[in-house]
Image (cartoon, rainbow, N blue to C red; front, side, top):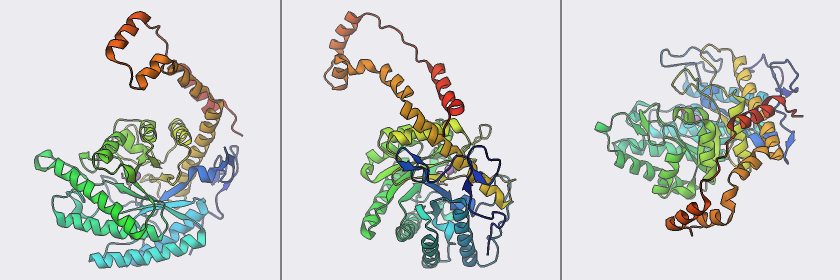
Length: 442
Ligand code: XLS
Ligand code: NI
Ligand code: NI
């Protein structure tokens, strides 16, 4: 059965001049950029939940998209068909990875045991498809937010019985991720937050969450899962306030609860903007802490205040993200996961191709631009020069922890009023635009 019959062959690179909507303009998987291929740099992943299971629901209406694989009355059969469609899609698109929640690939059963059975059955099938196609699992996760039992949280639920259900789910999801060779495991705190502080013991809930994460790492050690644990910050939605608010909050949480060595961050563009930051701010915050693990690439809509999860098309923001990724020497075990879905009105399967092709090209082009900017060194030189004073003797004394307030008072008095130096922001924006629009990338 072919679910994507209108795509006759795998999407090919045709270069920037092509007018073929089913071709890449910039994503040339085997093209080398600074010693690595684009495929190795970008490590694209398809998000199973949106691309295979998304049906266009929004806060004002239920499903509006029909998929030929989401049919039939037996949920396990449907899951098997969906899996086959998934691997057909991955192969046609030419992505190396995918990501899933437990409940995306296998339906919840009537009991914990039945849920586990369903998952194991689909994991076997996924393992087979992975072998056949060479597509790999970037990361797995557990859906701890859709079922009504998690209304008041999963790990942060006031009832330990709910906590235990969440524990069972994470255990099974970790087993599944290990069997499928996932390079990571993500915790996004779907309902780990609160709606009203009047009914919430915030101190206790944060302790619970930390305990939960410790249990997960302990279990991973027990089963020999060596993947990277990731936390994905998000400030709100579905909760009014989520404990994993933003990168800085999560870094503080990891330090406070002795989780620092075991976790890195999975930064999502739309979560950054919901937190009142830019994507690059969040990427940079994680990177300078040595904790930039992986990215969920999407974007919000500037006029809608929620997690619209649109496909990434913003060149400047993609360049900034790639700039930081290159600066830290690459994504390593992480990847670029399309946590994005087509709009409710884009209900044809072909729309899924347009969406992913556009996202892949945006980031492939961003990689070329960021690499060129780095090699030319213009921005680096500017920033280095700007902080030059801190490489001189007194600057070094300050950073080395030797300088004191009285000493600096004397020094400041001797130096007199420092000259004021422009930050040249507009000039730098022009430089960026030169790279974005004027520089040849071939
Ligand atoms: C929701 C999150 C979710 C995570 C995985 O906003 O982005 O999709 O990436 O649970
Ligand atoms: Ni999100
Ligand atoms: Ni996400």
